[in-house]
Figure 1: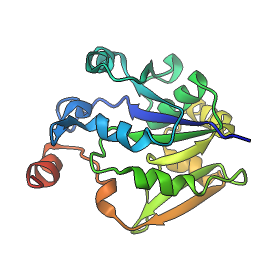
Figure 2: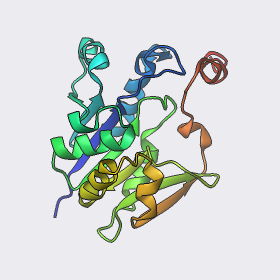
Figure 3: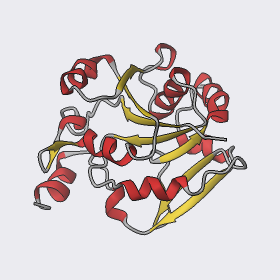
Figure 4: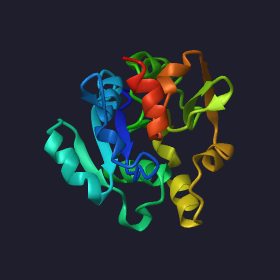
Length: 196
């Protein structure tokens, strides 16, 4: 049986702490979200980029060969879980390989390693770095769709809450830099400006 892997880029955040849309901030001449695309592309059948209406036109101007989708109306603005649910509502696949737009050091080998652990006995495959769980760079089974919906309907947005009630394969990884996410200008200065 061929498992369909659907790529999902979470790009619905407001980037309030950063002050401008992080997806389009550049590292080495490429917008951040391109690094998410490059990490996913070798392994997935297609990529959905889940965003909000304010950013939709900006992504369209980039002309990437990915499908843009706006957060499900009922759950708009409710964070990453809403983005994952929107992807599951939009495209039916066996597994959803999820990544945010603010991890410009991400490499394809991270995704390749997680895919090795795909198993019908688990609901999700989630990396850990120095004991820290990274649920937004993970793989989720389609069977989790109802659990995500139920949690959102109760107003519970935290991905960690979902994982507590799921069968999760945690995969320890050792290169912290791949998982650096840029939340504000201080982190941008530290990791991007000073890295050049």
